[in-house]
Length: 142
Image 1 (spheres, rainbow, N blue to C red):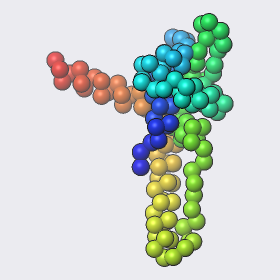
Image 2: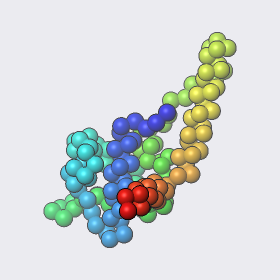
Image 3: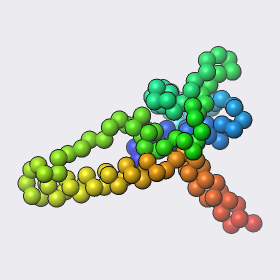
């Protein structure tokens, strides 16, 4: 039960923006797309959704681009996924045959657990995990 390509690309773009957030720098879609090997047109659609959701801010003009609208530690993964994917489909666990009820109840429980975990994880948490992995790789090669 991983992430869709859309969510993965959106999170990669947000991590790029979080890396430059402290300097106030803006990144353009083309720059993010080339760094992360994301189709540019597809990324533009995601950035628009994230801007409409209040996660990003866009600045027009020659030196324009995208910035995070709030600090990385204030951006919950649950809100990112909601912007990109919309509300998850839910099934009434009490409908259908007993077999379907059991399967639907399990699916509902997994959805709740996933939502809870994503609501407790921020963009800054992803950055910290990435940085720890990069440091471990660097130490391995010494």
